[in-house]
Length: 329
Image 1 (cartoon, rainbow, N blue to C red):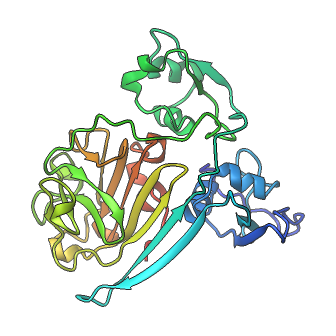
Image 2 (image 1 turned 45 degrees about the vertical axis):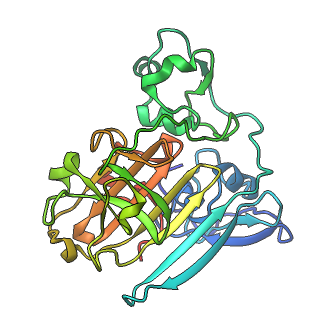
């Protein structure tokens, strides 16, 4: 839920949160926060956030700075997070790995809380978006088990949300659909903070946006992906891994040293993604990916997703911090 943060008076009534006995962790809302960002940070779903914080409304437009939210509940259904820190022997940079796992007892339940539409023969994403005033990105975001507009005929008879759902996983959790061709040089992989890949220009000094279609994969180890090269020594300054097994995505966020690949400090970066940049690019074992390199700020991010809605490809100018919320220290 990427609604802008609403700044309200501190005189507002205190927010209801899960009882002290059941809430095991709270978070204080800061300027710039929104529900999707908080959900990702703590590895929870929007449904859980609202269940533990009844005052958060369905549009998530009533957050305010200083508000305390419950972000973890002491129940068997609560995602658990473990964090480990390791120091590479070849540098003083610390690489932090944060892994979120979700209890297998969590199952799709309830109703999605949206207007449902049944896909019919002859439908296309284009006519559905026109009929209901949606973007293609919204169709994916509202429907985590809807994977490909180009294969909409395989969804005939199935229901999708055409308004924003309050419980988008009620109809199911996203899964890998298979049928993936992993081509040499254009297949990325994300395993953990020590084993991951990213696209980069085909040669050092290349402009990111100007060479997006020619991007080639580099990894922490060339064995991670077919035809991959190894990152230049010192290029990756920090790597923070996070995953959400309910939503079905993994991600790496962190800092680079642009000088190690002769990238320009004036290069504001660009985006590689599974919508054809580069053509045929995939993330091994996932249905979609989005990957940004931003030399001007020495930041980078990559997220591999089972639901294309969690890897938005149409807002590249928003940058890493919005597209892949995470740790950029």
